[in-house]
Length: 349
Image (cartoon, rainbow, N blue to C red; front, top):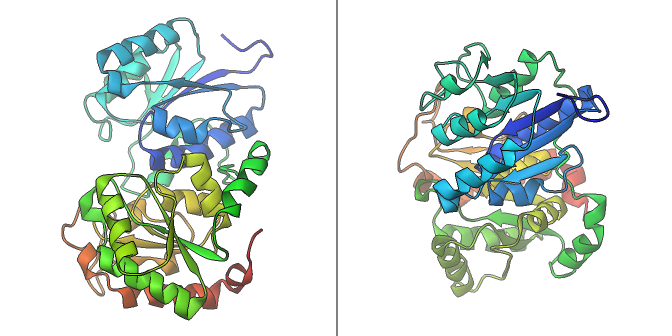
């Protein structure tokens, strides 16, 4: 069961969460680098699929329409029935991912160890990575490469912008002020969000003290739209790109001098693009889901108490984001200007 040119057929099961899709990219690039003739199929929901589609190391995307419920799952099953794989890698630990892994035909199905596989997910795999103490989500996915004897270095995301996007990139950037900082003002959970009036005060300071215009990025949820309106009502000049397609967001982040982000997918996209990112963390543990290997000096950490050496864990902490002051964020902007001078002076046309 190999592809026509002799390479293995590999199926990746990681269907949801855009941030998790970003974390899986180094796994995909390493697999393809190690075995260029392999054919990689990735099962994704529509949102992350729109980010990954066109990636140079992904040969095929199968879209799981979760919104269709069981009919979406059965439609995916029908697509999988016409394909044979040599290896299925189940990077997700919920029941639907287990069912999809069950539907995919392959002699080897690699998943998480029993302790980490939720919803009895371990029952749907026949090979499991060894147990491991809590660590960053990115490292957790890289464990699969270790299990497959695939070198992880160099760590590559290849998130873009891709050559095919250059024309659209110029169109997107033509509408934006330069130089600018991208402010990622919304997240999927209200406990991750910051106060609208503080975003407004921050945007004012970025322009007056650092010469940076502000571009608002994120989705178009009611909370994000409300925050954008509050910023506009305060008299702050900020360009909104809320609701922009994810591939356009890649372009926006890549052209930013600086990104200031809540605990959400664009934070990890910025790291993948090597754009300095100030991350505002309070609800989730930064050691587990913060910026990976880069820009730790730019984290605004409201998760821990002053001087606390907290362990890596999945535990949430409520009511922490209100502790972050505009002064806290501006202190990180000052550090960005001091530590990343080449970035600060560039306009990245």
